[in-house]
Image (cartoon, rainbow, N blue to C red):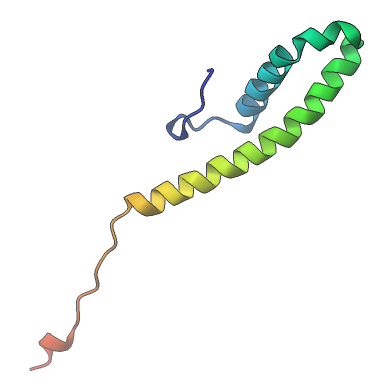
Length: 83
């Protein structure tokens, strides 16, 4: 699960795991400079911050896309029924 699309509907846990893996991979060259436990703890904190914003953004875009895809229903006037 390397890419997230709106149709995938990933859970919060899946998004956090994905962000954690990407951050750890991107910062892996700095891992030998810091103790493993401290490195993992800092990555977890950053993951929570990023994942929360990603979840909010994906929910907003889902709602926006849902509103766009739903056709507007036109209401008929009842004026013609009065005879």
